[in-house]
Amino acid sequence: MCGIVAVTGYRKALSLLLDGLEKLEYRGYDSAGIAIVNSENKELVCNKSEGKLINLINKVGQKEILGTVGIGHTRWATHGKPEVKNAHPHLDSSGKVAVVQNGIIENFLELRNKLEEEGIIFKSDTDTEVIPHLINKELNNLKKLNLEDSGSTLLIAVRNVLSDLEGAYALAVLWSDAPDSLVIARRQAPLIIGLGEGEFICASDTPAIVDFTQTILPMEDEEIALLTPLGIELYDSNNERQYRNPISLKCSEQVVDKKNFRHYMHKEIYEQPELTQKWIKNYLIKNSESGLIKVNYSFDTNFLENIERIQILACGTSRHASMVGSYLLEQFAGIPTDVFYASEFRYSPPPILPNTLTIGVTQSGETADTLAALSMEISRREDLKDELCKPNLIAITNRPDSSIGRQISNVIDISAGIEIGVAATKTFFGQLLSFYGLAITFAQIKRSKTDDEINQLISNLENLPPLLKELVDQHNEISEKLAHDFSDIKDVIFLGRGINYPIALEGALKLKEISYIHAAGYPAGEMKHGPIALLEKKVPVISIATPGKVFEKVISNAQEAKARDSYLIGIAPKCDGTEIFDYLMPLPLSDEWLSPLLAVIPLQLLSYHIAAHRGLDVDQPRNLAKSVTVE
Ligand code: AGP
Image (cartoon, rainbow, N blue to C red):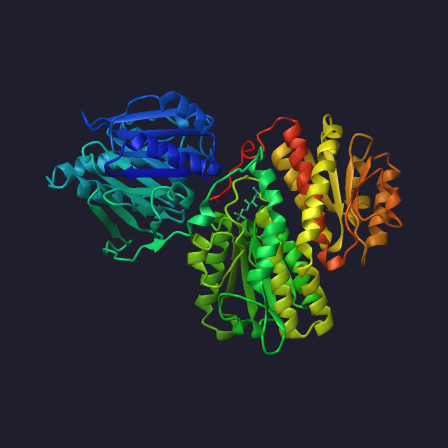
């Protein structure tokens, strides 16, 4: 949430900042702004615009702003409306200190009140604005000490201020009296330093860095750094200087290319068959001696043998994938599994039970709720000092280089390639595949299924890519036509049961996120307990009905909706029973275990085409951001 870019070096800061912000716009697009130290008169030049980055580019793109040191920000509003006055950077009263921040300063009101009592006049409603005022105050105090080096003075001032801040932040600070210097710091929000030759770029995420350098230094929690073109001084919270080797970026995974698609989301839906092919190649590995196929992890899986229960922490779409995962882990692998909203788990966790595996699922690897819930779980288990209750952890993510990758060493990399569309599609699919892998591993360990049953699932997965490819092409056409019928629709109900109930939830979430149509997903059997009151002609019901355990029940539930005049759309194979649907979005007949991987495709495409047909901003829907780095 919110993207930060900061540069110091020898090249013009303006274009570097704007390029970087463009790559981070998925993190928020309520407003954008930059501040640069003018290299001639050493004054800060600050420009901001409401709305998307393009507004800022139109404002400053043609300007000649001289200066090689600057900071930039693209905002997702938390405190204060998305207006220019609340756009970052925020300046102190002297106009010499500028700050961009990502995160929330929880004690900002208390700090603001104190500063106001001292006569400081605030210009914004944000929590961030307290920071430049506090830094300026510290700088004034430090001036009395006559420190020689202005960069170090800024570093000390920022460090002193940070000790007064509560909450999470990643921030970058400029001071016009230290014209070559940048100070950056992080606590529970990502910040990465890109190392060039005689220049540095610092950003919330790697796409902003990849065109600049492949060598990065991710900052650790509570670290602060002073950057000048001459080098980096990095310190931990105890003020100990830190020396670490930088790491290399896997640049192929960061390339942002829309190909011939109008929207990234559309392209990303189309990438799912290839992603599946890649997953099969990377993860389903045949042992050359035994001929057995095992799932290939990058970590030692011996600890899984003692696992008796699983808890999964996730948010949004990742939570929906986890719910399918939970179904597979319980019903296929026989392990009791619970899925929690990460935001709820942190404050009301269940009692600690022994031999528990905790799985954190997050495509971005930066979701604050998920990271905080995991930290809490790790520390309460470590505090117990009981070997049986020790934290056993796995992360499922598309960004092994992210905060979750640093928090948890056992990472399942979904390797979906960077996802730009704010509404997750291919990363959801990658998460599902990871759960199929885990269910196979646990079924092999626990002997919950026969070898034949396990091999059948493996072989069904191996046969999936061409089926998916056909499905995407077929449903792209179907959905494009069907989207016209949704022009006046205001509410849609999604129904599913068993393994496909989470797919109904995901279908509803996708539609809400990008088309702004109200949608709700229910387990089909729950309709009669209340939601059925919503049904009428103008409320279409989209029902996932795949042959298996609950097929007849789902069809009966669909009948109940039809009796209330609803227009019934079936995501179902053409077979006995599915003639009840007014409109059929056909699925191939398949094994029930596999059905979520098929059923989600028409739902993604339908949401996409409805939103595109309405002329909406599919890739950057209002009020959302790709990485939700505030709690
Ligand atoms: C997905 O379409 C959403 N934008 C959102 O629900 C997302 O899944 C959620 O914020 C969790 O993100 P994560 O996977 O990066 O943790």
